[in-house]
Length: 277
Image 1 (cartoon, rainbow, N blue to C red):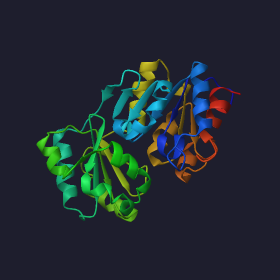
Image 2: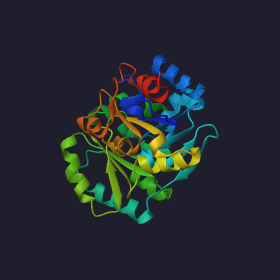
Image 3: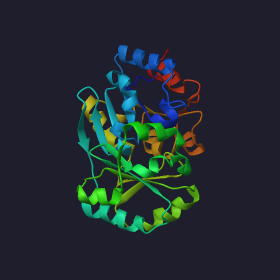
Image 4: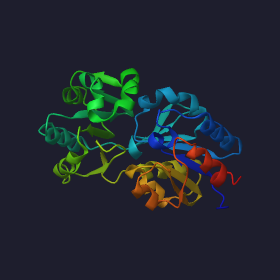
């Protein structure tokens, strides 16, 4: 592939981050080389702003960051949100009212003004929801409150995203069905995670803002991901790349499959596809 691209967009978990939730030296060096060559490096993640605090050392390399699965676009150099899309208040209220009556064995994680908020007592229980790799990040960086539903109403929060973590991935389809009449979109970066955003929102919506802000088209964009919440951006980009560790669905949607996240697959994308080396 010798096409000229202006930017590369990386998902985080399962893509830019290795299984230990680290950015390898090889990937960081490739990002530096891309920036030095005048290319844009962008991250598009389902995470909240405070959920990436431990990775702020790469902010100088990033042109923009898409957070909350496409609901928030953030300028890392100015440290400010430049665009966001939030639930209508009535819709968020109904999500809480309906989900509250589900099986009590669940964990809420909400994003308001780009910041992640969860329940204090659940942070120590994240392994139960198959989310142990995220536990240290939640303990050290995420806002923790005694009871999230009450906090939501008391603070009159505006929300960009609602995540509900379940102990069993098999329960997710039935729970999604109870909310299917609402104007919402569903995605998932982890099997036990139900990610809910306003209707029509996916990573591609944040990337539309990115493309406009940076003066690029989707055809001039390489997107890289590994999971179902990356499918829209893999399909619309000039070159969609699935990680070697990605799902079968992601690989089917992609134009190219790179090495996995244990073997610097993101560096391969930069050198082979973005810089044509």
